[in-house]
Length: 234
Image 1: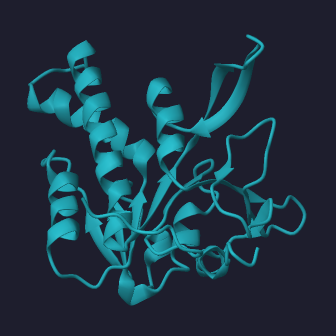
Image 2: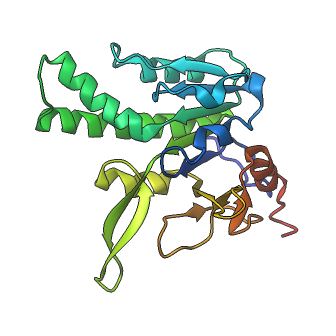
């Protein structure tokens, strides 16, 4: 079995979830990534923020339930220029999966089987795309936000805002990525920023030192801070 030392700096891609209300600017934020090295997996059908840019786009087809899996296989096994992949967005993808399974089976409305298959496929794809970090790819998962009730260590029920997806999957998903950031807009200035620090209202997470509780809405700057931090020097 091959083992390696952890080292003092990050030596792989990163998995980052950015979530917020629709229209807050998640896609616009992702366009700060290098044009020639970034692929958008588009499930939203909204291309406005990408117009005039030179990023590559893969539009997921409502007629092919295997599109996302086939793209993963391409990214995992083929030679390509993409160092950054933006999954835009996973909340819409979950809804799209349920609809696709329902249509495929000739049903008018989804039933328990469709919801179960959606949950399984969603979990599988999120893990597979997360694992692209070991191929040197940084994966950005965009998501909508949604309030969920959770029980704290004292047994008290609290409401916190999570990335929007199935209740059981939301917490597990936040556990498998490196960073969970809530995109926010300053009420007066209109400037966007990323909440990374502890919050009573929002689920946030960062496995890395060197980041502030609030970071500017610029992904290259955020990634540089993570990669430049030397854990030996502190």
